[in-house]
Image 1 (cartoon, helix red, strand yellow):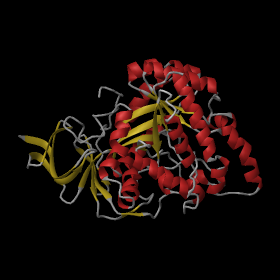
Image 2: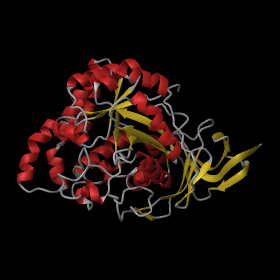
Image 3: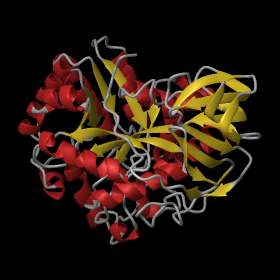
Image 4: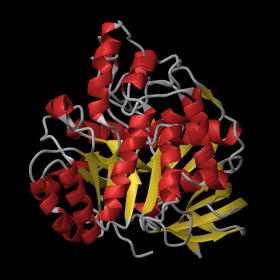
Amino acid sequence: MAFELVIKNGTVVCPDRVIEKACIGVNGGKIAEISEQELEGAEVIDASGLHVFPGVVDPHTHVGFANMPKEEFYHESQNAALGGTTTMMIYMLQRGSYLEQHPGNRTLGDANCMVDYLFHYSIADQKQLKEIPALVSEKGVASYKYFMTCRGAESVRLKLEAVDDGLLYNYFKTLGEAGAIPCVHCENMEIYFSLSPALKEQGRDDLAAWDEARPSWAEAESIFRAVFLAAKAGCPKIYIVHLSSKAGLKMIRMLRGMDLGIEILVETCPHYLILDTDCEAGINAKVNPPIRSREDCEALWEGVCSGEIQTIGSDHCVRGYEQKRGSIWLGLPGFIGTGNVLQLVLEYGYFRKNIPLTKIVELISENPARIFGAYPKKGAIRVGSDADFALVDMNRESVLTAKNNGSLADLCVYEGMKVHATPVRTVLRGKTVMLNGELKRIEDYGEYIPASFGE
C-alpha cells in the first residue's frame, strides 16, 4: 500500500515507547500506519538521524493582548511552527458576549493561524458566566480562565469588572455543571497592594522586588482558596495555570491529601523551571506570577519528575522591549515563548536532568491534549491521530534569539542561550509548515479544534 506521505528512518518518540528507525504512513492528514518495516509513499521524508516527536500542544498562549488579534494569530502561530508547536490553546480575554464574539474569533483564527488551535475564554462577569453551557455544547469551548488577581487597580488596568469570591464560587459551580474545566490564575492582589508601596519607596527595581511584592505564599494561599471553593461548589476538577513556586507545590500536595473529591491538575512554564531572580534578562523577565528563586526552580523540576505537575505551557504573550520600559513597576508583564518550549524542555529536562523523552512528550503534548479535549486527535503518534510532528536534530546546536522567530515581539528572555537540539521540520496534518527554519505558508491551513472528551 502506498501512502500520501511516509516519514522513514526516524527515532519515533511516543509517551509509552521509543521506536528506532520507524516508518509512519500518512493519508488524509492522519497517521494511517506505524511500522518498523519499509513503507512506500508519494512523498517520502527521510528522517535518518532525527527524532520524531508529536507536535507540541501548548496549553497556555495568549492572542489579543497587544490589541492586534489578526496580526497576533498570524505572527505568533509562525513562532509556534518554527519551534515544533502544532497546536496552540489560546486564552482570549474579551469584554461582552463570547457567544457573539466566537464566530469572529474563529474567522480570524481560520484565516491567519498557521497551526491548529482551540480557545479558552476568560470569565470576568456574571453575564459571561451564564453563556458557558451554550459555549460548551454549541461551540466546543470547554475551558475557562479566572483571574483571581482582577481586583482594584488590576481590574482597572485590564478594563474589566473587579471580581470577588462570590463570582469565583459561582464560576466553579457553573463549570462543574456544564462539564467544563476551570483554569485559575492564583495570586492574592490585596497582598501585592499591601507590600509593593514599601518596596517602591526603597527604590527597588529588580526581579527580586517583583517576587517580594507578589510572594510565593500568596500564590499558595490563593491555590488553597480556589481548590477549596471549587470542591465545595461540586466542581470535579481544577487546572492551576503557571505554578511558580515551591510553596504553591507544597500547598497542592497538602490539598491532594485532604480527600476533597476534586482532581487537581497543574501546569508550570519553562521560565519558572529555568529563570530565577538573578537571570540576565533582568526586568524584561517581569511576568505574573513572578520569576522566583533557584530553590523554587528546583522544587518545580521535582514536581515535574514526580508527576505532580501534569503540563508545561509557555504563557506566550506579545511583549517587546517597548512594553518593558520604565521600571519593574511600570513595564507590562509577560513575554513570548511557544516557539521555545520544545528546545527548552529538551535542554533542561532531557540533556541536563536526564528526564526520559517519553516523559517529556507526556508533559508537552499528550497531557495537554488529554486534559483539554484534543486527544487523540492531537498529542499522540498513533494510528488515527493527526499527522502532527516535530522532527528534531538532537545534535544540532542553536542559539535562542528574538531575531527571525516569527513573532511580533522583539524580545526573547532567553536571548543568547545555547541549546543542544534544533527542530528542523514541523509537519501539520501531513503538510510541512517549517523546514530548516523557513516557514512554508499554507493558506487558511490552521483549523479550530472543538473540545471532545470521547477518550
